[in-house]
Image (tube, chains in turn orange, cyan):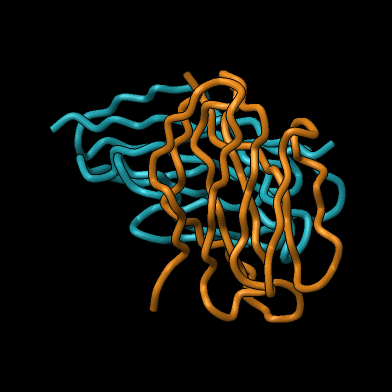
Length: 116
Length: 112
């Protein structure tokens, strides 16, 4: 079946502009995660959605970052007023979530964001 | 807070050499432990996992044993191949459907 998909695969933006990154999880997966992979910080957790519960936003680095998940499926990560330090690969992952035994997270190919 | 510490890279070995990548963790309770791999130009993939103490995860000739007494999960392979060249991440989660905490990654290069 289809894996996790992310779009765009690459995004170049000017400092100060807003960007939206999209994630389509695997069908049937109730949990969705965003991570960021950057040279200086490695792989960092950003935010986690589980079903209809309030998201765990504990990893968001600043209030310029936000995410939503519509209809329990597609998610959008928004970065407002981008800064050069936001340049990174943004990874999305999904899993079955609670009570389903297997909780392996499947990762998408990522969106490479470059802020100039 | 929870954390994962793994061997600094890069690691360069000749084909058929024995591989060990060290990983230790800090966490209360009984986390689940993982090794993820990222091949050049590809996404992050789960390589192996162990969910309780003394469990051994294995896949593609790689093995790692969950050692609670030493809080370690070292990755080993008896005979590496050029195709094993990748970045390897040790990781943990506190429970099912929970965020992953990653180590910094170890880049492995295998010479023919």
